[in-house]
Image 1: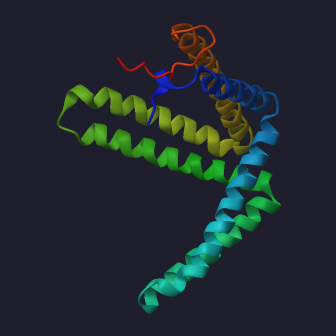
Image 2 (image 1 turned 45 degrees about the vertical axis):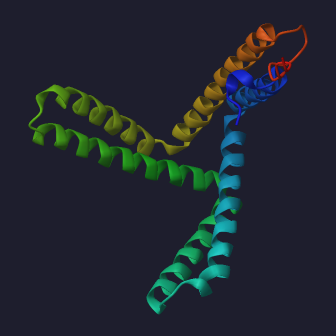
Length: 189
Protein backbone atom coordinates (compact mmCIF):
# COMPACT_ATOMS: atom_id res chain seq x y z
CA UNK A 1 0.00 0.00 0.00
CA UNK A 2 1.44 3.33 -1.01
CA UNK A 3 0.98 6.55 0.90
CA UNK A 4 0.41 9.98 -0.65
CA UNK A 5 4.09 10.80 -0.90
CA UNK A 6 5.01 7.66 -2.83
CA UNK A 7 2.27 7.85 -5.43
CA UNK A 8 3.11 8.85 -8.94
CA UNK A 9 2.77 12.56 -9.30
CA UNK A 10 0.54 12.03 -12.33
CA UNK A 11 -1.98 10.14 -10.17
CA UNK A 12 -2.09 13.03 -7.73
CA UNK A 13 -2.41 15.52 -10.57
CA UNK A 14 -5.26 13.57 -12.16
CA UNK A 15 -7.11 13.23 -8.88
CA UNK A 16 -6.63 16.91 -8.20
CA UNK A 17 -7.89 17.99 -11.61
CA UNK A 18 -10.95 15.74 -11.29
CA UNK A 19 -11.63 17.21 -7.85
CA UNK A 20 -11.32 20.74 -9.17
CA UNK A 21 -13.63 19.97 -12.09
CA UNK A 22 -16.22 18.34 -9.82
CA UNK A 23 -16.01 21.25 -7.38
CA UNK A 24 -16.48 23.90 -10.04
CA UNK A 25 -19.38 22.00 -11.63
CA UNK A 26 -21.07 21.40 -8.26
CA UNK A 27 -20.83 25.09 -7.34
CA UNK A 28 -21.89 26.28 -10.79
CA UNK A 29 -24.91 23.94 -10.94
CA UNK A 30 -25.92 23.03 -7.38
CA UNK A 31 -29.46 22.00 -8.37
CA UNK A 32 -28.16 19.54 -10.93
CA UNK A 33 -25.60 18.30 -8.41
CA UNK A 34 -28.34 17.60 -5.88
CA UNK A 35 -30.41 15.82 -8.52
CA UNK A 36 -27.51 13.60 -9.58
CA UNK A 37 -26.58 12.76 -5.98
CA UNK A 38 -30.17 11.93 -5.03
CA UNK A 39 -30.66 9.76 -8.14
CA UNK A 40 -27.39 7.95 -7.41
CA UNK A 41 -28.52 7.42 -3.83
CA UNK A 42 -31.84 6.15 -5.19
CA UNK A 43 -29.99 3.68 -7.40
CA UNK A 44 -28.05 2.45 -4.38
CA UNK A 45 -31.30 2.05 -2.40
CA UNK A 46 -32.81 0.15 -5.34
CA UNK A 47 -29.89 -2.29 -5.50
CA UNK A 48 -29.94 -2.63 -1.71
CA UNK A 49 -33.67 -3.38 -1.66
CA UNK A 50 -33.37 -5.96 -4.44
CA UNK A 51 -30.41 -7.58 -2.69
CA UNK A 52 -32.36 -7.79 0.57
CA UNK A 53 -35.24 -9.51 -1.23
CA UNK A 54 -32.89 -11.93 -2.98
CA UNK A 55 -31.08 -12.91 0.20
CA UNK A 56 -34.10 -12.94 2.55
CA UNK A 57 -34.17 -16.75 2.25
CA UNK A 58 -30.88 -16.88 4.16
CA UNK A 59 -32.38 -15.01 7.13
CA UNK A 60 -33.20 -17.51 9.91
CA UNK A 61 -36.61 -17.36 11.58
CA UNK A 62 -39.98 -15.98 10.53
CA UNK A 63 -39.94 -12.65 12.41
CA UNK A 64 -36.50 -11.60 11.09
CA UNK A 65 -37.62 -12.54 7.56
CA UNK A 66 -40.65 -10.28 7.88
CA UNK A 67 -38.45 -7.42 9.11
CA UNK A 68 -36.02 -8.00 6.23
CA UNK A 69 -38.86 -8.02 3.71
CA UNK A 70 -40.32 -4.82 5.18
CA UNK A 71 -36.88 -3.17 5.07
CA UNK A 72 -36.48 -4.25 1.45
CA UNK A 73 -39.91 -2.86 0.50
CA UNK A 74 -39.13 0.46 2.23
CA UNK A 75 -35.79 0.62 0.43
CA UNK A 76 -37.50 -0.01 -2.91
CA UNK A 77 -40.20 2.61 -2.26
CA UNK A 78 -37.59 5.18 -1.27
CA UNK A 79 -35.49 4.25 -4.30
CA UNK A 80 -38.36 4.75 -6.73
CA UNK A 81 -39.29 8.03 -5.01
CA UNK A 82 -35.69 9.31 -5.16
CA UNK A 83 -35.27 8.33 -8.82
CA UNK A 84 -38.68 9.60 -9.97
CA UNK A 85 -38.81 12.79 -7.86
CA UNK A 86 -35.24 13.71 -6.84
CA UNK A 87 -36.10 17.31 -5.97
CA UNK A 88 -38.83 16.33 -3.53
CA UNK A 89 -36.67 13.53 -2.15
CA UNK A 90 -33.77 15.95 -1.58
CA UNK A 91 -36.00 18.42 0.25
CA UNK A 92 -37.45 15.60 2.37
CA UNK A 93 -34.01 14.27 3.26
CA UNK A 94 -32.86 17.79 4.15
CA UNK A 95 -35.93 18.31 6.34
CA UNK A 96 -35.15 15.07 8.22
CA UNK A 97 -31.54 16.20 8.64
CA UNK A 98 -32.91 19.43 10.12
CA UNK A 99 -35.06 17.51 12.61
CA UNK A 100 -32.07 15.35 13.54
CA UNK A 101 -29.86 18.42 14.07
CA UNK A 102 -32.51 20.13 16.21
CA UNK A 103 -32.96 17.06 18.41
CA UNK A 104 -29.20 16.64 18.65
CA UNK A 105 -28.82 20.29 19.68
CA UNK A 106 -31.44 19.97 22.41
CA UNK A 107 -29.78 16.80 23.72
CA UNK A 108 -26.35 18.47 23.75
CA UNK A 109 -27.68 21.45 25.72
CA UNK A 110 -29.47 19.09 28.14
CA UNK A 111 -26.22 17.18 28.62
CA UNK A 112 -24.39 20.46 29.31
CA UNK A 113 -26.89 21.30 32.05
CA UNK A 114 -26.75 17.78 33.50
CA UNK A 115 -22.98 17.24 33.47
CA UNK A 116 -20.87 17.57 36.59
CA UNK A 117 -17.80 18.60 34.57
CA UNK A 118 -17.98 22.37 34.04
CA UNK A 119 -14.92 22.61 31.79
CA UNK A 120 -16.62 21.12 28.72
CA UNK A 121 -20.03 22.64 29.36
CA UNK A 122 -19.45 25.65 27.11
CA UNK A 123 -18.51 23.40 24.17
CA UNK A 124 -21.66 21.32 24.57
CA UNK A 125 -23.83 24.45 24.76
CA UNK A 126 -22.11 26.03 21.74
CA UNK A 127 -22.41 22.82 19.72
CA UNK A 128 -26.03 22.38 20.79
CA UNK A 129 -26.97 25.93 19.84
CA UNK A 130 -25.20 25.60 16.47
CA UNK A 131 -26.88 22.25 15.74
CA UNK A 132 -30.25 23.66 16.76
CA UNK A 133 -29.94 26.81 14.65
CA UNK A 134 -28.79 24.88 11.58
CA UNK A 135 -31.56 22.32 12.17
CA UNK A 136 -34.23 25.03 12.27
CA UNK A 137 -32.80 26.65 9.14
CA UNK A 138 -32.81 23.28 7.33
CA UNK A 139 -36.41 22.61 8.36
CA UNK A 140 -37.59 26.12 7.47
CA UNK A 141 -36.22 26.00 3.93
CA UNK A 142 -34.98 22.55 2.93
CA UNK A 143 -34.63 23.48 -0.76
CA UNK A 144 -32.10 26.24 -0.08
CA UNK A 145 -30.38 24.12 2.55
CA UNK A 146 -29.74 21.25 0.15
CA UNK A 147 -28.40 23.68 -2.44
CA UNK A 148 -26.08 25.04 0.24
CA UNK A 149 -24.88 21.53 1.00
CA UNK A 150 -24.23 20.92 -2.71
CA UNK A 151 -22.32 24.19 -2.95
CA UNK A 152 -20.28 23.32 0.16
CA UNK A 153 -19.54 19.87 -1.27
CA UNK A 154 -18.32 21.56 -4.45
CA UNK A 155 -16.12 23.96 -2.47
CA UNK A 156 -14.57 21.10 -0.51
CA UNK A 157 -13.91 19.12 -3.71
CA UNK A 158 -12.31 22.21 -5.26
CA UNK A 159 -10.06 22.76 -2.24
CA UNK A 160 -9.06 19.09 -2.03
CA UNK A 161 -8.37 19.15 -5.76
CA UNK A 162 -6.09 22.16 -5.35
CA UNK A 163 -4.25 20.43 -2.51
CA UNK A 164 -3.77 17.28 -4.63
CA UNK A 165 -2.46 19.33 -7.57
CA UNK A 166 -0.05 21.11 -5.23
CA UNK A 167 1.12 17.78 -3.82
CA UNK A 168 1.57 16.43 -7.35
CA UNK A 169 4.02 19.18 -8.18
CA UNK A 170 5.83 18.73 -4.85
CA UNK A 171 6.16 14.97 -5.48
CA UNK A 172 7.33 15.62 -9.03
CA UNK A 173 9.92 18.12 -7.81
CA UNK A 174 11.16 15.65 -5.17
CA UNK A 175 11.54 12.83 -7.72
CA UNK A 176 15.16 11.67 -8.23
CA UNK A 177 15.24 12.55 -11.92
CA UNK A 178 13.38 15.10 -13.95
CA UNK A 179 10.09 13.73 -15.26
CA UNK A 180 10.38 10.52 -13.21
CA UNK A 181 7.84 9.47 -10.66
CA UNK A 182 8.60 9.01 -6.98
CA UNK A 183 8.05 5.26 -7.08
CA UNK A 184 11.40 4.47 -8.64
CA UNK A 185 13.17 1.73 -6.75
CA UNK A 186 16.72 2.20 -5.52
CA UNK A 187 19.31 0.22 -7.43
CA UNK A 188 20.79 -2.87 -5.81
CA UNK A 189 24.20 -2.33 -4.34
